[in-house]
Amino acid sequence: MELIDKFFLDFVTIAWGQPTQLLLLGAGLFFAITAKFKPYRYLIHAFDVLRGKHPSKGAGEVSHFKALTATLSGTIGLGNIAGVAAAIYFGGPGAVFWMWVTAIFGIATKFFTATLSSLYREINPDGTVNAGTMYVIKNGLPKYMLPFAYMFAFFGMIAGLPAVQASEIVRITESLFFSDVENFAYIAGAVMAAITAIVIIGGLKRIANVSALLVPLMSVIYFASVFVIIILNFQELIPAISSIFYEAFNFKSAVSGGLVMVILTGIKRGVFSNEAGVGTEALIHGAATTTHPAKQGLVAMTGPIFDTLIMCTLTAIVILMSGVEPTAENKGVLLTAESFQVMLGSIGPLILFFVVLCFGLSTIFTYSFYGTACVKFLFGKRGVPIYQIIFISAVFGFSVGGFDLAINVVDSAFAMMIFPTLISTIWLAPKVVDKANDYFRSL
Image (cartoon, one colour):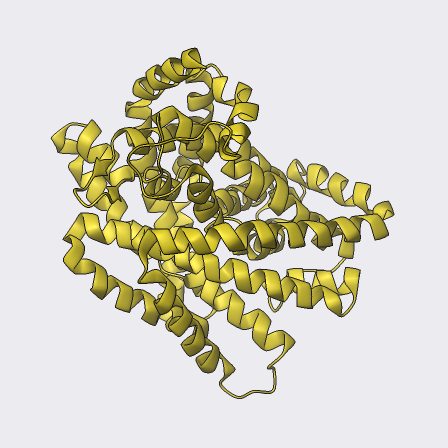
């Protein structure tokens, strides 16, 4: 196990080097400039589409709203609860600022990737849709670029495994309620595997229906809890926010690695939070019912606003206001739970547990669709049952495994998905601009 841990630690360190960081931030800036910042100017319209003000008909499996809630169920949740806590542990408060930067650029990135996914998707005779980066490359780029499609799909299978979600659900459940139960992780893992099997076999529509119920409900509960914390401890709010900005540019940061580590951690956790540039969102947004590709791109770009600029910020404020120091033992979701307990008393961890459980499970369901879509591309429908068995087994396996291994596995796969996604999106950016201008003229 130590060799496996070391391998993924070394791999993720190399994969998330400066080339990856520059590609992510540079691509987001490139997309924003190429589109003349028009997507940002149509944010109000994007929210109107999301609310159903401009309904769409035609091919597709899910509505605009369900496509967004399904993708948000893969981003809002442990990326915002455990991921932010991990960011503060590894990179200090300043890492949160760089998560914001990643999200702001991610708005433009998601507009481009989702628009392309909708533009180059394939409609099957039974009405189901094949969409995602691999189909953008297959149908939009020259044939010699096809290996990038296979590269994306291969690492998409790995990234789709429920590593962090299964691990963190077990950790917080055991910590709060079952610390005295021997081998609790094995019991919890088996229960989660059974629940997962029931949902994921129903496909995207069942996953989207579950997400459309859980995500808004959990978001409201979480937002209300943090709002109460801020009201009761308003005097701590300004110092908490100030520490984020101060540490973001503090060259003498106490965090190991200094400013470089702060920036690197913020970008990694920002990507884990909103997944902009990874290409996962394109797998679902491309399958949405829409009358125009750019219309779905507008819906997709609201994702980083919800999951990073709002939800991640709420988590960071609670942790920083609580004064709880992150350690090797409480990093991740346990740090957030301890912070909630300090701020709200014994009811705090219970609220967080309920939110983590629902968000974590909905994220697992969504990730199963990501992995399944990649398997279909690589092996056809015959590979889906085999992957589902592997996925359900992974729910159990990562429930028993450690947090460090889980987060390094996901980070490694995400890093390798970024290159085919952003290279193809940059290549086809003029197509997006044409479609965007066409749509904006029609308004």
